[in-house]
Image (cartoon, rainbow, N blue to C red; front, side, top):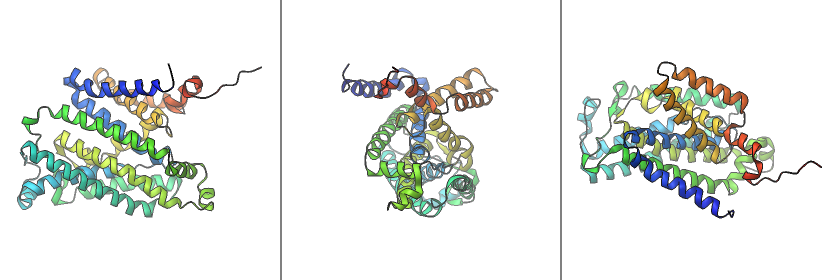
Length: 342
């Protein structure tokens, strides 16, 4: 098989899976949607955490802000916001398919703009921190934003807000969002693949290897770090908007800013698959989500214990992740030349 044929078969196979999997497993369309969302989580976290060596626990902020922004725009477009503030947690906005799609698209665009601007402002300040200081700062940032969202009446405060109801005329919400999240994965994967092949990719790798030396060589490190966080925020805002509408209800701590689950899982998935590689976060997210669903269905009550043990085993015995382990075991399959001992 030629080297040009392998990528075609690989991408073609993944495309077929993305198209036909939700059709073949209609009862699992929501889980499939969440699975693709997990891949987006891992890919976007790896920009800073894997490629640049900055372990961020604050990426969940952009997920939640994008979620609230998209839902709020739809409510603003078609409903009296004054009335909405009073009954936000009880009101279910019913829209026609055209209005739903227009509001969703506009909300996502506005949410992405807000998240990128927020990432630029926050990143310009806290990305000057390094190591543990940066990680702890982003951890506190995610918690603070979640608590702050619970005090804002405009978005339902602690009672949360209902996202617009998915129009029945459009068919299954699970099928719609499984395709939405698959397209988001494809867009984020190929965007990052291209970015990593440019000067941007070289710059963030130089920051990871030796930031002081990169800065001494004339690289504006803070600008590149901030730009990397903006790219993460852009894709996470779309993921948040999609999940809020798929879930149907937005709660500040459990749905929009769940730092103890989604916020930590995006780190674990990248490490599990092999951070700093393009395919590692993809493999890690798929393995994590499928294993987690399996534990939930077979070890109810002990599922988190089993998941924790699995993570410990992987970190101890496979410190480079699944892709790192595979690369060491079969280097020739990854294009590495192995010199035989004489």
